[in-house]
Image 1 (tube, rainbow, N blue to C red):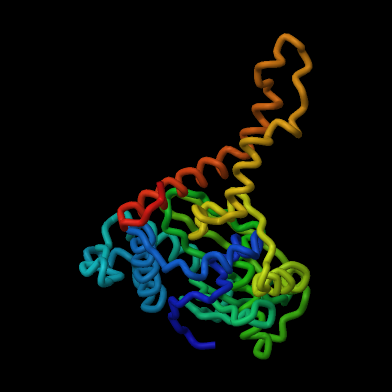
Image 2 (cartoon, rainbow, N blue to C red; image 1 turned 180 degrees about the vertical axis):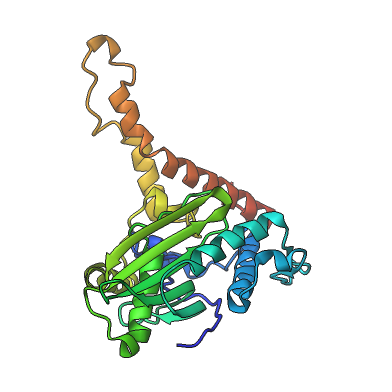
Length: 309
């Protein structure tokens, strides 16, 4: 397995796995939407490029202070490595260098197609080593440059799929056993967040066969199952025009009281109790995100001269 940067995305990507594992139908409705990016995403890519340079050359991030990374057609000047970027990347580099192991792979393409058809992804950092009891440990580290949503390592499907790719690509070399360890790490330095989660190779393989493989097969069906929800719908490209999400949101708005326990006090029958408030609050994010996306899409179509209203 050679170090190789490949920023292409698979149809069933590791980075989008939190969505397609929860809602197989999201794949078919997203396929005709163009890939989009943002300044935040491009800044993150620049941070990854800086981190790759530091890890491969074994130098401190500050050495590249003032150097621009990730120059694209949209951002021809790229993103200059300032103090904030360098400090964040150095935190990540120090963490990676401190992990046990000798075999290191930076920005490495991994293949998890035995469980996901044509499945591949690019892992930020992989280090394979031995534990004190002579078992192997696979370290999969994911750098998150964002400052918004905090990401956690426990059962993180992106990291788990990368680890499956390591098993697939390197098993001939190491002969991994079910008792060997896998550690998923999330390093989110701009919000001072580092999170780790350890599982076994056996448990990872069980998850792959029990959850990943059958769900990936569902994603490729002509009439896949839809399962709208806050997490999987939030960044779905089809959020605004997905009929399943529209029906789900409207049902929660119009029929939300059907399964809410009635207020105990007859005097409060016209007011929401704390229990009722708690029940409704569970659906607020999904409804609000859908409504905002719906409005934004409608205005975008109007600006293109399409008749919406």
